[in-house]
Length: 233
Image (spheres, rainbow, N blue to C red):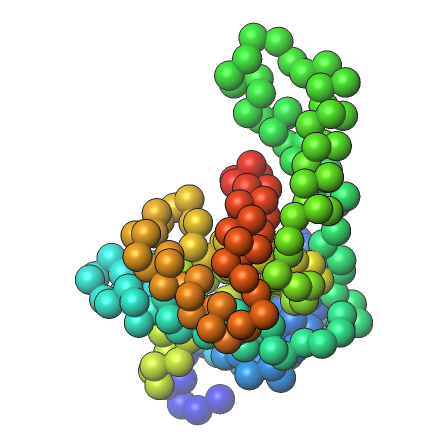
């Protein structure tokens, strides 16, 4: 690269499949018009990637320093809109994010949370009923459409770039599933509770781009798909 140009070395040698996923999703998002770090060099065999350095202006840091939250969340929602518009069919190599898989993921509640708060472990029947109820809820809830889901879309993984655009990071776990999931991740981030007016602004901005989605549908979708994410967090 240019003399004096900074770069980031991503070390995924313990999980080499992540390198391939990262590069594949970076390319897909970039083609959809989303800013992702350019891949400068990749060593698949040893699990190293040399990436363009996006700097250190994460949305989290900017918000902490008193930047205008409306502007930053507008940029974030615009990226979700861009991702939604960028994909009409499931790209090769992008896994499904199905209700059954997501319900099964909630078994961690029994492994970690349950023993902390209740005196005895769950019975097999309780476990099965819990997973079954979630599977049904995830199947029946509105999903705001099926498309490419980042799966960790929140202010820690968004950056303001030198040109004022929004850069997106940490997308290697992207899957094909309910688009409500990323919207819920953004506006119901457990690490940064969002002011009600900013939350409402995000939903309005998203809905304005896709007027066929009605408010009740959006609320129900966020409640269920956000709820599943919260259970895991």
